[in-house]
Length: 84
Image (cartoon, rainbow, N blue to C red):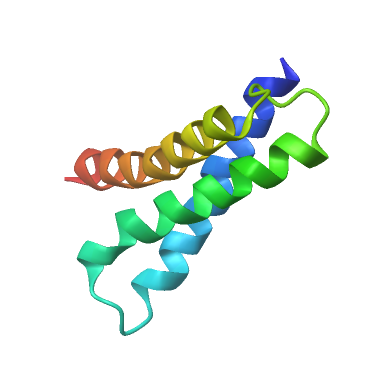
């Protein structure tokens, strides 16, 4: 269960990073790339820091992180569409 919690925490952190980028002068089309890269970095950090991280090697940790980062963009879009 803790593996899923770590992935959700990466999603939340990347979502917050995306919100910060949204209010910056950076164009919106860069947000998925930025949160994906940040997620990949957080995935590698999580692999080394969190004992129950769901990846055991760097490539899988990067993949988990990027997926989590991009999921934060998807969560934002679901929220925006639900408001409409």
